[in-house]
Image 1 (spheres, one colour):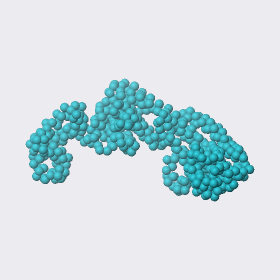
Image 2: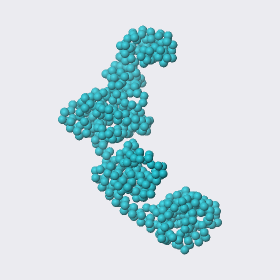
Image 3: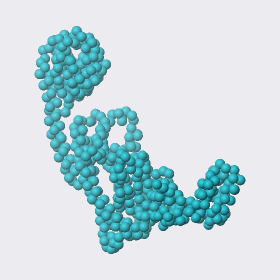
Image 4: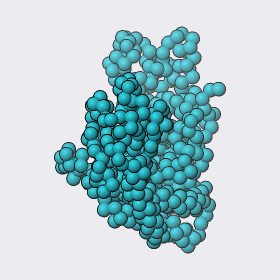
Length: 519
C-alpha cells in the first residue's frame, strides 16, 4: 500500500539523505515517487506523491521559492527532496522555514547519490506492500465469501470482519436501526471513556450501496496505533458482501410480502376460507391464528419529489425493522393509496405503532402520516368490516388529530356513529340538514353567527360564561342567539338528548365537508 516518510528515511539506501525541515509531517504516507526537474506546474502533482527535484531556477528566484512549499502542501504531497550540487549548493533557509510552517518534510539528497537509487529504495517496499495487500485481499475475499455462504447472513459477515481485524464492528441500516454490532451498544462504556481515550481510537465507516440504493452503514473501530491499511481492505470486502446480502434479503422479503398480501386481500374482502387452509397459511407466514386481531390502515402524503410507491416502501421498511426487532408478527397488504397491516391486538402492537409514528415524524416530517385502527375482532375471518372501520378513521383523521398519532375507531369521539352513513353525501346531509339548514339560511340573510354559536355552546357543555368568552360577545347577546337557535331548530338546548342530536348534526356536516368537499 504505502510507506511513511519516517519509514523511507530508515531504509538502508536512504542513510545518506538528511531531513532539514517539516519534521511534523514525517508520518505522511508516500503513495508514489515523482521526479521533476523544472517546477513549472505543480498543479499536476497528486496527493501522496513524493517529489524529487534539482530545484532548477529556484536559487535566483525568491518569489518562486516563497510560493513553492505552500503550493505543494495544497496538493497534499507527502514530501519533497532536493538533489543538491546541481542548481542548489544547499537548500535555502526560506524553503526550510516554509516547510516547517506547512509541516511538509523537506529532504536533502547529496550529489553523489543517483536518482534511481532513491526511487528504487522507496518504490520497492511500496510495490511489495501492494502485492501483500493483493494476496491479503484475496484471502479476505475467500473467508468473507465462506461466511456469506454459511447461511449466517449479515451477522456472519460482520462477525468475520471483527475476527479478521480485531476491531469493534457495527452495522446499522438506512433508517438508523442497529442490525448487529457492539459499537452503539457500548454507549455506556463510551461515555465512561475520557476524551483522550476517544482521540486514540480510529473509526472508519463505509456505506452499503447497490443500484444507487443505500442499505446501511458498516463501521469499524480500533485503537489508532493498531490500525492497518489492510483493515480498510477487509472493511470494503465486507461492505460489498453486505450489499449482496441485502439484495438477497429484499428479494426474499418481496416474495413474502406478495404471499402475505394475497392472504390479507382474501381476509379483508371476506373470502370464505376453510379452517384447515386458514391454519396452514397462518403457520406458513408465521402469524398466530388465535387471539384478537385488528387492522391498521396507514396513509402517507406524497409529494412532487417522492411518489406514493417510494413512501410506501419507506413505511414498509420502517415497520419491518420495528416489528422484527421485537419478534412481532404482522400481515401486510399494499393498495394504491394505503397500506393495511393485520396485527395481534395487544399493548405491544399498539406501542410499536406509536414508535412507528414517532420515528416517521423524525425521518420524514415533510410527509404527513395517518394511522387509523379498527376495533378488534376475535377471528381473522371477521376483518372485512374491520378494514372499513380503519379506512373511516383515516378519512375522519383531520377532524380529530392534529399531530402524528394513532386514531382508533373506538375513540373517534362519536364520529363512529356516522360510520353507516359516510359512503354517501346524501345520507350525511339527511342527518344534519333538518337541524342546521335553518341556521345557515338565517346566518346568510342576517349576517349572524348562529351556527358557530351553537357549535361553541355545545363544545363548552352548555356553559354560557365560557361560551360568551370564547365568542367575545356579551352574555345578553348569547342569550338572544340561543333563543334564535331554539326557535329555528325546534330543539330544547336544556334537553340532553336533543343537544346530542344537534351535536351529531354538526359532526355529520363536518364529515360531509371532509369526505365530499365542494368542487
